[in-house]
Length: 97
Image (cartoon, rainbow, N blue to C red; front, side, top):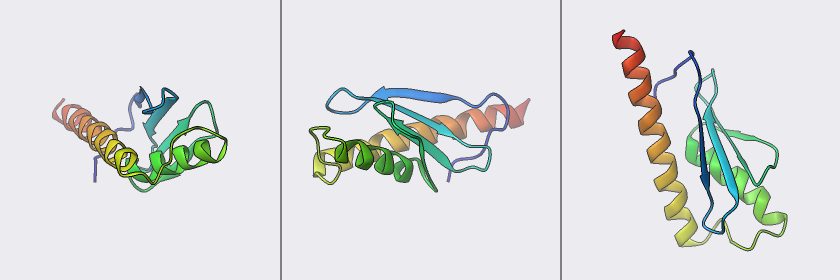
């Protein structure tokens, strides 16, 4: 689990495989929030949980990709791993100060 950073939370911006905007951030509680295509934010215990919830809602709103496809699942895991790694690194840098 990635460490929490209470100072200056970072929001990561990227795009889904079909080009929709995706915003991901770590909450003060340590949970994660993600929103896709300007939709409402969804939180999860992990970044992957939050991303999956956000893109599942987006998919039900006629976005032409399936959140359960193997390609999208692999993409979600890759994105989640990257933001959790960056959050942990940032947290470690904050502690070292």
